[in-house]
Length: 141
Image 1 (spheres, helix red, strand yellow):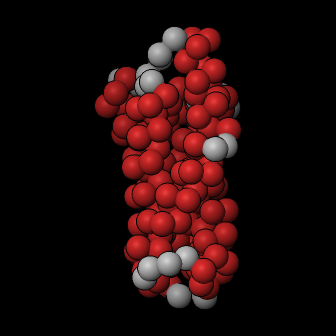
Image 2 (cartoon, rainbow, N blue to C red):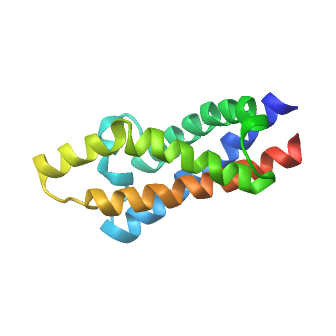
């Protein structure tokens, strides 16, 4: 059930992080738009858009996790946390995520979060995602 476990675990963790994303955005700004990117998904209500994108990302990253699982150090939840940290470094720090946020911050002003706060929030979300993925994957493995 390795590959299926990664997909199922990724979907569950993705949904949870999508909801967490919405709660953080709501608490910080009073609106249901995760990091104010929901305007890109105007075909869907912002809460649905945030959960959909987190779930799709969760499924893809869960499938990748299932393939990398043997090479990740640690056991169970620790493997997931390491994977979440790795994804945060690749996707948000070295990748496109932080760059887009900085450009948006320059263009529109600090609408919700500064890039530094954004990076810390995203780190915590990826660690939660990784821990949940690791726990669910281990149960389904």
